[in-house]
View (cartoon, rainbow, N blue to C red):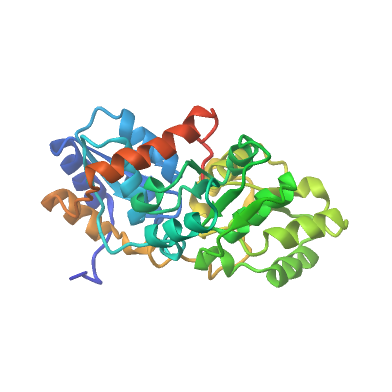
Length: 328
């Protein structure tokens, strides 16, 4: 039971770090986590970059502050380690749009097709996948597949549309899944903010429903093309350091703003949609992180055979050379 009066103060942060040291644990926090969680973590970033840190860490325990598929990916890449997530109920609306059974049926309809799955998928889906991708390397991954091969791309329809539009690839089939948070950042909202903020720069995640609108507005001259940037969360963090704009409007989950503001305090970073909050990410609270470290819960497990097959699809992506640090 959560205590509504719980305060994440300096004493909490000291206890969290002390317990992590006692448990030989590293705390990883996704960019969409609460600011308090991000600030106490040993590492902050996108899910794949964090999973690779987990795999390379000397710590025996990883506490993954993110959603469940992210902790699964860490387990896939660091199978010998104990992986904890402070609340195992923290799911993902995008990952839930495509199950392993659905993917197997889709593959049966397109024998011989190459399956490309966004890293935002369950371990079971990754096990049925030929090669994974992130939002920063999805175009590169699909471009690496021979032109005469059919491609099944899932589960995010907006990222798939971005890849198809970039490569002009006709033999690419896209699963119609979406992240409910990113899908809710729509083109009408974007256009309204563009007209109201003529000097602002725009950072737009390719999962967003407004990504196509952004490219259209840029190509039609409503927004100067140099001010419209389709970026992964890691890409946003890098671009925040070098931007010369006074204000940047950001289309992704609002937790990302904390890292952007830390990266460049001189720039005003504002969300295009203030309601773009992932309830699953916010299930990881300071209190639950503390309890996870005290009690060793909730442990994430993946069956060995699934983990082995899923690891192959992730490693094929990594072999291409640029999966992260600017991953999803």
